[in-house]
Structures are given as C-alpha cells and as structure tokens.
Length: 522
Image 1: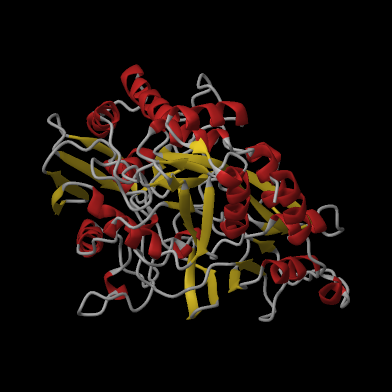
Image 2: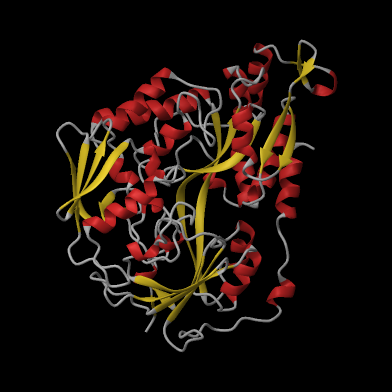
C-alpha cells in the first residue's frame, strides 16, 4: 500500500467512537472524594508492581512520597533535594553532599547521613539501579554529610543521584534481607495504602519542613485503557489524568469542565539498527532508510501532531543537546534511491531491492506497551516499501529487543528512548553508545570521536562551559551523520486537568507530578 494511502487509513483506524461510554453523560467534579475530605483523584496508566525504587518506575517520586538527594527542574537543571549543596574534591575522586536540616521520614525518624548511606548502599547492590552506572567505591557518613568515593572521575554523579531509582527511603522500609516492604519517604505526601497493581492512597505529611500540600489527600488509580481514562476525566471522576492518547485528546479538547496541558518531553521514538547486518553496515543504506521516512505525515497520522516529527535525535526540550545548526532530517525519496543504487542494492522484480541475488528484506521488532508503536512500525514498513525495502513487522514483548541485541539476531527495533531517566543525558548516552553498543542504543556500531566526546562530558566538572557544549555538539552531529539509530518522532506529554483544580504545573521530565502545589479553586 502506498505510504499516503496507509497514513490516511491509519488515521481513520485509530479514530474510535466513545459514544457508548459517554452516553452516561458528564457530571461536575465535587471536591472531597470518598473520604469526605479534600482529595485529588489522579488517574494514569502506570501500574504498581514493585515497591523497590529500581523497579517502581518513579511512581513514588512522581507522587512526591519519596525524595532524592539531588532534584532537577523541568529543564533538567540540578537543584537541591535532600542535599542542599554538594561539591567534588580537587581530584574529582570524592564528592560531599550536605543534607537538608530538619528533614524527617514519615515514620518520624530523621533523614540523617547514616540513613542516606544505608539507602544508597542497598541501591548499589542492584545492577538494575541507575546508581550502578557510577564508578562508586564507597559511600560513608561524615557527620551530617554523605561522602561518595569514586574509582575515577565522574562529573555526572549529582545527576545520577537525581534519578528516581536512587530515592532515599527510611530504614524501616526494608526487611532484613534488604527487600522493600513499605515506602517510607520524606516528601510532602506519605503512603496510607498501596493496593497493587492499581491503587495508591496518600495523605499530607505533617512533619514535612517545606511548603505543606494544598490538598490533604491523593488517590492514584491505574486505568489501562486510554479511552477509559478520557471518559473518567470528562465525567468528572478524575482531577488530573495522565497518559492520554492523541485520539482521545482530540475528542476531549474544548469539552466543558476540563483543560489540556502539554509539554514536549525529552523522549524520542527511534529505529535501532544492527550495524553488522549485511545491508545496515553500510552508512549509505542507513541514510537511505532515514530519507525514506515522511516524519511529519507519520506524526500527524499516528500521533496527531506534525510538530513532533523528529528532525534530530534530541528534542528542543533538551536545550543543551538540541543543535539548531544541524541540517534537519527530512524525506528525499530520490536521494534515498540514489544511495541504495550506490550501495549496490538495485531494483529487481516487483521493485524490491536486490544485491548478489538476495532481496533487501528486514525484520522490524516492536512491542504493544505503547499503543502508537505498532502503528508507527506499519507506517515505517509502508515508507520503506516505496524505496524497495521489504520490512516484516513483528510485535512481541519489549524484552525481545535486548535479547535480540545480545544474540545478534535483531535487524531493526522501534521503541521510545527517554533521555531524562537521569537529568543529564550523558549518563544514558554512555550506556546506549558504549563501545559495544547498548540494549536501547547502538548495535554493533561505535565511533571513536563520539566516545571521546562522551568521555570528556563524563570527566569535565564544568557542564556549562564551552568545552562541554562542544562535546555535546560532537555527539549530536555524529548521530545525525552516521545514523546508528534513526530518530522518528519526539513525544508530547498531555494531561487532562479538571477546571476545579488550579496550581498544577506539568513537569516535562516526568520526575514529579507536582501534586503538592495543586489545589481546588475557591
């Protein structure tokens, strides 16, 4: 099917009717909730399968139950968290973090250096924890400061300590074997009940030394289907609703009683390529695949937003990494065809590219956890068919992508990459573009110049200086030129907020849902 026809049919296919659901009508929201007190009803797609910080996907930091040593604002700039300030020793091999005075856990115990050290030491035992990316040799208490010693210089350490997986929990959170049995944090809200996988109830923590929450309780519910979340928002059953799909948003925009707030995320839909594949090892072929993609049309059809078509890897929300000087990625079918011809892949019978009698046929793996990915994969399949590349789309579990990377069987994979899991993208990039590649980055591709640039960023303590910016530009430029991973689309987070709620601020990094600042309109 021609790409234009596919995109038109895709747009129609993802438009569904909620008439049966909305027949129940819309009722105005009434503050107070089931408990008869001021309660924010929050709806989202995220289920609760674990209390462990490394596996809970940041749900307890988003709900402002737990805090990290270092915090970050919506632009990724580091700011105080449980630590008011930090500094590195002259040789860069140790860091000292001074703790916030008066901070207390929800069980009434103080957030002291010993408790922080205990939490970080438990985090270090898990390879899945972001803390494992830092070359830490020791964590120790020194009075009311926490000292972290390193085997080598690692300038992004404060950013690693802002990752949600490094949240600091009270000693009472852990069983004797180190497993997390309850979430006892230090934020403005404390846990009343966790009912996995779909419900968390919170109440304001009287012992919080900062600004008290404006609303005294929160009930978070996980709702799997986006159309059901939209219905709950529209009917007044939710105050704040996260995880909205483009079709539901279009339907609900302009409805009375609710508003939509949006922010461009530091996240990109990418096409991972196996650079040892007989065809994909050729940079000309990788460029041809990129040139075949009509990103604005795909973003419009699948995500209903042409403005998020990716012109480079890093979206504008990553201000320090988005390079306006780069030539934008764009569709050019003639150039794509010329590059394939130049690489020896000529059109054979039926218009399919061939070389040495073998067709250019690739398998594209994706997963259904994000509803837009299979549809986007089919759009890519249609686009590449126009330049003679046959693509078989396979939808499977997300775990198949790292498995295919490990055993070398992967051709291509489509997924989203969040560059703000750690506020400094350097940490994610060091993992994704290491010499051997990474599960969610390059595969069988490496570039010495990029390795050098990332190495400078890992050791340069001045992340605001000209040398650091030059290194970022080198990384962005190399990814744009060699395309070991092809950017397809950026991401926009959209939240439905009931008109009865004021003071809500959307965090583009998705670190916090800023519920403590939200209140009911007087």
